[in-house]
Image (cartoon, rainbow, N blue to C red):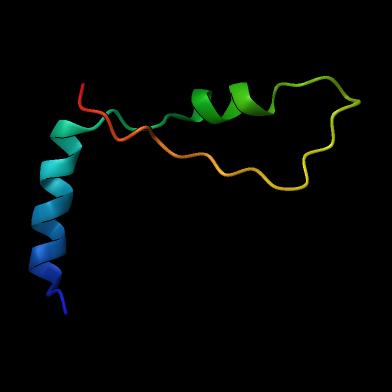
Length: 50
């Protein structure tokens, strides 16, 4: 089981290696015509380094 310190260390490293999603990324996904009905949407970063 991970300790909180392990998770914090991973997160700090990930912040410098991943391009995190922004509010604009999510908004662009939701910007669709009114005739579109989203039942479920999963939005994730690609996980690729900058």
